[in-house]
Length: 167
Ligand code: RB5
Image 1 (spheres, rainbow, N blue to C red):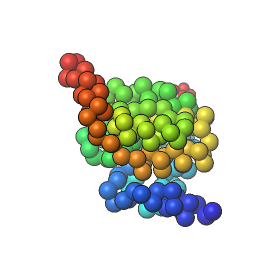
Image 2 (cartoon, protein in one colour):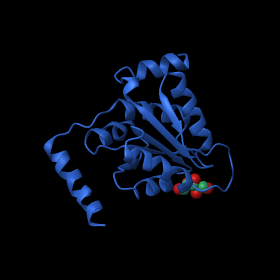
Image 3 (spheres, rainbow, N blue to C red):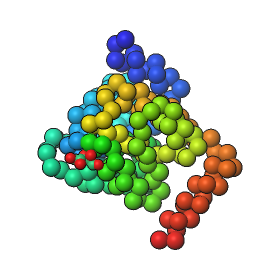
Image 4 (cartoon, rainbow, N blue to C red):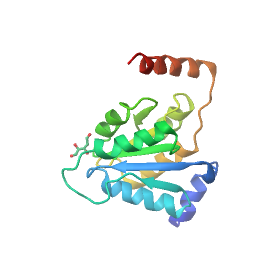
């Protein structure tokens, strides 16, 4: 299937005008970031690229992931995509920012349940681990999912939010 049609078909449940995606990657995730951003832009999504702007071997994921995470926490972007080589460093960095609920995702179930139950707002990917096609599927699944807002989910998130207030 031609790429644009594939993206639109898989994201049919999402109102694109309601979502502003932020994306960031170090050198380990740079190529995947470029490909995902191009596919999502082609499909009509609003995307802000927090860098890296070029492939620079030895650059540091916090330099890109922290500004992205701050923007998500402030509501300047709706959802974040943070990519490094394994996705681990990006995830650790993103979760340092209060209000961020980031997870390293490698399977479609977690890509939607992480939002539905845990209100995940930054999805992390490993550019050296997850190939482009699966990554795109994971991203679209993440973007299409919504927090269910059930009392037990809110209660659990409240316990986490309380920790941030204690800091
Ligand atoms: C960079 O070489 C690599 O360590 C980084 O992209 C990431 O995988 C860290 O978690």
